[in-house]
Amino acid sequence: INMPAKTVCFESLRKYDGSGFRYLNSKEYFQIAGRAGRRGIDSVGYAIAMIDRRDFMYKALTRMTGSDTLPIKSQFRLSVNTVLNLIGRHNPDEIDLILTMSLYSYQKKMPLKEGSEIRRVYKNLVKQLKTAGYVAGEELTAKGVFASQIYSDEILTGELFATDFHKGLSEYQIMLLIGGLCYEHKSRTEFYKTFFNHEVKTLLNRISSEPGVKRYRRLKHIKILTALLTPCYNGASFFEILKNTSMLEGDVIRFYRQMLDRIGQIRKATSDNDLISRLDFVQEKIQNTIADLDAI
Image (tube, rainbow, N blue to C red):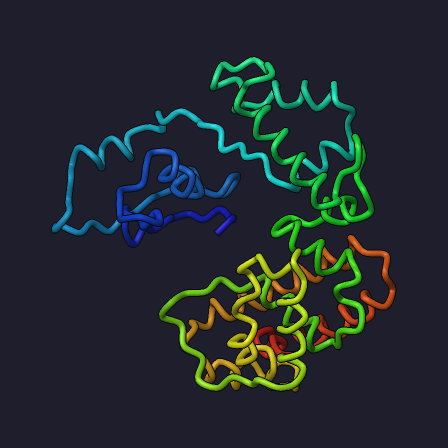
């Protein structure tokens, strides 16, 4: 929670990092514990941690909580969005300078020579973007300008909404596409009733017939997502929809809010008034569904 408090409590000092459980490192610990103590209110802040004796390791705990000695390491990653914005806002000489001035390059002690890692990644991404029609020469195409304002799944989103792919799709089908872009599938998630109809079938056929779209796995769950999106489109309440899935309440809320965020990005990136109108319709449907939460 991004807010100060007098006391910070840790339920555990171990976390799951995607591959297994481990102790927090000192930087992770102090990032959270540092919230303790409100400026101008508290003279001292407290950090309290629950310890499980089964995996208690005194040296690991003192190393973690004693001081924040872990050095900062660059997490710099050249994404499609980064490359598009570099090309859209800077000339080649400026781009070279920006890449050399990154913390990543500094820590790796790598000058920006032709064979350097960061330069190689950049050139490969530019090549892919040129092949896909997002970059022409040293400039962005219309698709490239659109995708430069999208912060996740830039290429797929561009293929769906910066081309003619979305033309003729209903608001419901637009909702399914955006849901597909946002959904993170978990193998244990259950949907008790799905709603496969002609519109869903038509949309899936269109996806499978479009080479620039069908190769992405993002949209493979559209059919099961009808369990969340069809009731939403038809005006069901959040709590009614919740009965149709094993997803946790927080995960369903996050899914809908991610859809709203993605709609906002696409709406800002496009100049197609018809698409904006359909996006506004979908946005209103989602907002009506989660409006119940604001009343709690």
